[in-house]
Length: 170
Image 1 (tube, rainbow, N blue to C red):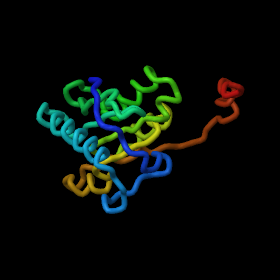
Image 2: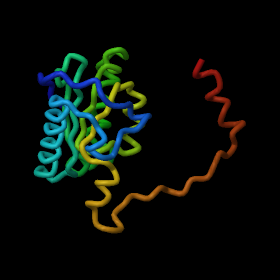
Image 3: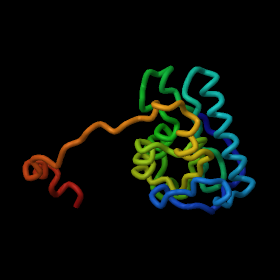
Image 4: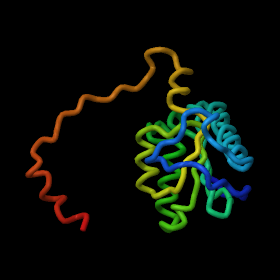
């Protein structure tokens, strides 16, 4: 991840938990938003050129400076969690105070997956702006390549499982 300076991001948009519109026509973008998204798309191209999945992201601070940027390295690192959104969320949680994190914007070439959306929510990032929706990404993939959820059963043994957790969140 590399720090750099850039233009001020817009305050338009919604949080990850509220969801973002999936079509560009529905999203009001400023020229700064577009520039940041184009930079994220460039990082995605860099990832693909390096043999990794084509995804890139950058984190802009409240003053419009790029705090960090990265691209997907899941193949070269042999790490299925090496998504740029997850790496930037982890960086922000470690390096930024909560107020600063809440004032940032994550610009990313594609809508964050469930794993990354969870990390973004837990890291307290303020806003996410993405270029390509998950639906648009899926349409670009060959049939049969979508991830499927593993079967899950539960809750099981909830009374026993609550013992180590009870009182932790107070």
